Image (cartoon, rainbow, N blue to C red; front, side, top):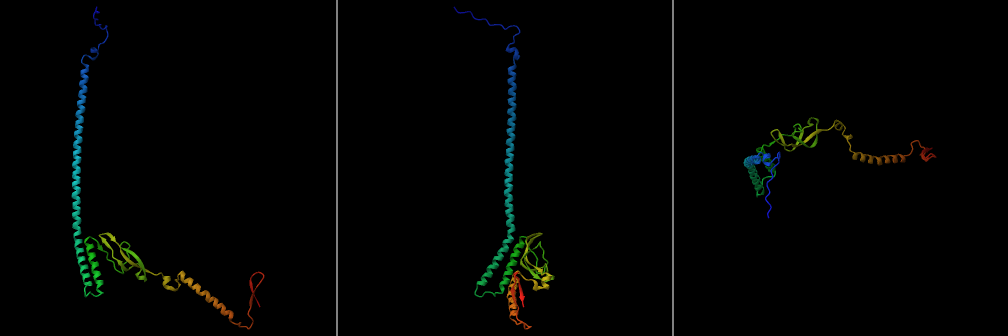
Length: 256
């Protein structure tokens, strides 16, 4: 025989139930708040993603602009360089023609006189200087007799000159070039230096160590020869020659 069904137990008085703790509708309110927070986070994340995308597009556009400006700048600089080289090419063409014609004349059956070679080389130098002038390089005006200037001249060597020409340019070896106030290359010159007064007044006193050695070497045989001549001469007073003899102390004295 089956047992009778158990009757549900009634809660004791004062015992709280789950429905009374949550107020009946507490769980649905919490889920709704969480859903609202998740929705707000999703919206903010989408806005941040859109901002990053727009910033990336702007950065890519800036890079494109920078690359295009760099390419245009390079083309412009190349064009300016070619434009600046145009007069230089023209001068070099003329120089090439001059050298070619001169070489043809010298190889011909009736070459020019040898003394004309100096004029040809001078003309070539002037042609090169003109080409350099088209690039902005001008020759430094220097000639013998000018005062030495350390800012424009480079001393290659010195030359002994008179007192009046001390510190002046004696000879120009290589010309210098400037561009405005900038010195591109200093002129190579020979600078005059006056000899000291002691050397000009007594030139015989200026002897090198080699000369002094030679002089001392030549005087030694001469002194030996003079002593030999004196020894061979007879005494003037008619007495016999005095011969030196060694004493006990190791020194020499003359005995009559």
